[in-house]
Amino acid sequence: MRTYIIVGYAIAEPVRRAIRAILDRLWHPALNQDGSLRTGAEVAELTGMVDLPSQAQQR
Picture 1: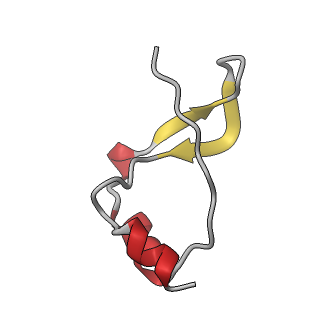
Picture 2: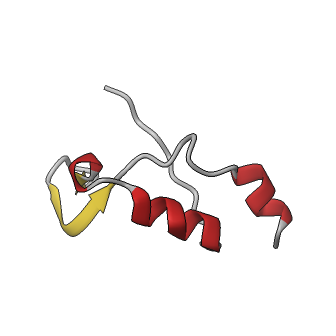
């Protein structure tokens, strides 16, 4: 099992564009820590779609 920690940050326009561009089939149900489905939540991978270091510099 792989476990990842997500760190949040302000969502700038390039990230919003990337989120809107993700195909519906690439979204997956989000899980709670106990493995149960998290109601009303989905996750998708943005790695490679946005240059995050440059986002941090724009703050």
